[in-house]
Image 1 (tube, rainbow, N blue to C red):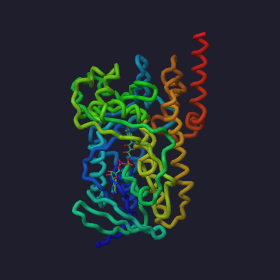
Image 2 (cartoon, helix red, strand yellow):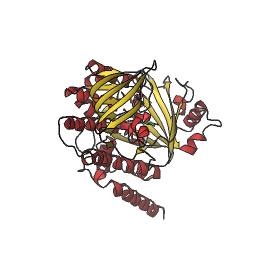
Image 3 (cartoon, rainbow, N blue to C red):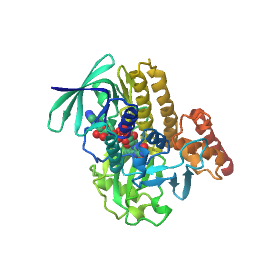
Image 4 (cartoon, helix red, strand yellow):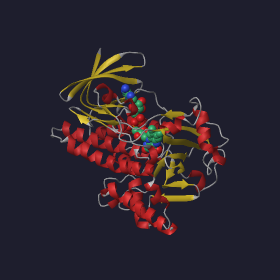
Length: 416
Ligand code: FAD
């Protein structure tokens, strides 16, 4: 079997793997990426949040993405019947980017991967990791290409950015059930022939069908729009009689008073995909000689579009720590990696849970709006979940519940 020797092997060329490999290359590390599929490939996760821009910028990937003319996302709109709540990222608490993109991921990820190659990184497509053996922090990874040929890659560190491939969690028995209750989604893209002119046509929106069920509408600059339904797994499975995803997504669209006219009669560009019980977790985020990043570690829920931001945050941090370790520093991975990443995961977990209890929805649709509260929540929705100056970050476990209770009491008083 042939052998290769690198400093760092990155598994997966999604956003997480592209950010980490680019950062390492920028710092003169001998890094290689192996990717199971051929790009462009379809993947879900089309609504970004501003925090990702920090990482694409630092990794040197921003200019290539910026040239692509992806639809700019300046905020997000939440709908509930006739009620509307719009967040504007330029009006948020604290520092940070005030815009990002909403993107067809096939094109977006392909741009990232091509830029990684342009930077001189050895990225091998259609090459799948099938085995890995660790000897201290050094490891030998066996990969297989599309012709069935295998080879060994010897590396000093492995960054597993394999998304739902979850290479190391599977091979090292690190899988752990998510703390969140089981939710699923069905989505597709449509040619948006009924798109309105101006802002209405391009605005990213989340339409609440029931407290735990919502429809996403993510318009792209190429004239297509992503439409998806999310809800408890039982609910999503019962949308069609025999698991027909086209019938299920049509039914879901018919439940949206706001969007039924725009999407009720359009064809899906591919058979709607069913993503069942999408939340996942792991027992540990690192071990001797490896770190897990992005969806290869933890995925919560799409409701606040936090997936990509965690993918790039963890990809960037794992790369920085791996670089320092290669340079001879002793790294406290528990403190510098796990504790840091899990702080942000905990904040978003609270927001996801409080979304599905309905408490956060109480805050979003309460009128008159409290501008101060809104700006602080907006910073969280922009992905700035490590800014402890923000009380909606620092006191995330109590503040939403308490405010929602106050609103409920106020409503009860008005009714009595
Ligand atoms: P990926 O983008 O999945 O990339 C992993 C790569 O690893 C893939 O290209 C894969 O082919 C490769 N790979 C897998 N196995 C192997 C192997 N054995 N060897 C080599 N390569 C391998 N996030 C958002 O930010 N916004 C959203 O709107 C959003 N919506 C979502 C909706 C749903 C229903 C779900 C389930 C998720 C959503 N997400 C969203 C999450 C988002 O999809 C992920 O968080 C994001 O894609 C993670 O990026 P990644 O780089 O970790 O993994």
